[in-house]
Length: 151
Image (cartoon, rainbow, N blue to C red):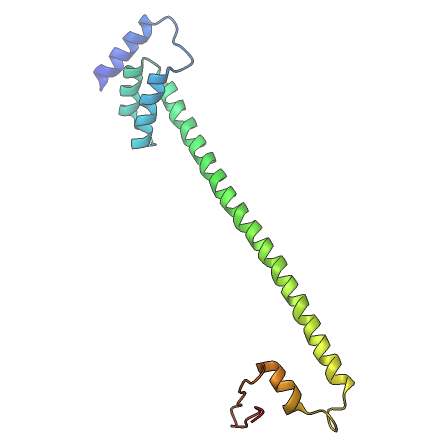
């Protein structure tokens, strides 16, 4: 590799000024190498610098910037996914709040109905309440084998 570094320093001396912006071919070669390995070892850095005709430092900085951009893109994708999940949770939360309100209203109506009647004397619990819970003509048998159906 010492020969390559020497060649690079000779090439560098011959160059009066290197371009600051990379060509499409240079970027393509850097991208190809980045997809194979996003970490840059010194040998690869000098080989790419020679092949591209740019300083090794510029190759290293390009790899560093590319890793930072890739990380930011990954974070952005993760953020968008979390945002969608959060919005779904908010929608579910609102739906559940509505359900809770509905159930609270039903409970208060049932409590009001029970409080308005004298349960001990005239309220027929078997005849009115259980059929309304199980629907018309349904069977409701408790664990102690009482049958509360109309038969």
